[in-house]
Length: 177
Image (cartoon, rainbow, N blue to C red):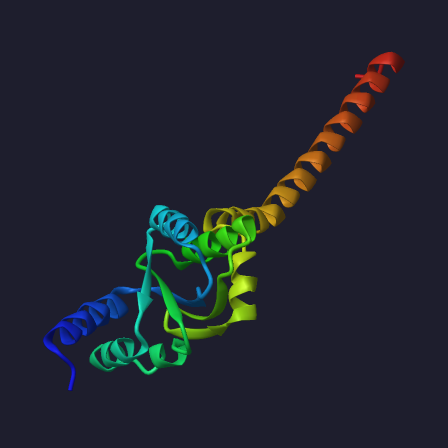
């Protein structure tokens, strides 16, 4: 039977589960406290938080949040990076921190917008360019055919103008009206 403190912790975690757009599960065993502090600071800058969770309380919270995905994240020592906005900055911040600091943090899996991702898929997500860059590329691709058409039409009209100007010069040189 859970104590009142555990029920309260489960309720707070369930609320976080319901609001989160991304949850990345990681094994943080062997990670020094100063690295954990740096990780939390990095994640806070990207709009996320890192919580060390007890699996039992997390299971209660998942049941309260009516989620069948969160129990799949829990195995052994579990830390959850929870993000509440755009998921990509959270994934990139976590991946970047692990690469830069060479911390003994191992990403196991993640939930992004209601879908479960494996560790390999999370690593692949971290390599996706930022949203703004993707939108700029898309707009460039959409604009390219119109730009090429305008260029082709402009060059054709320009060439016609040159031919007409040369013909007019020829007619003036021969003295024809």
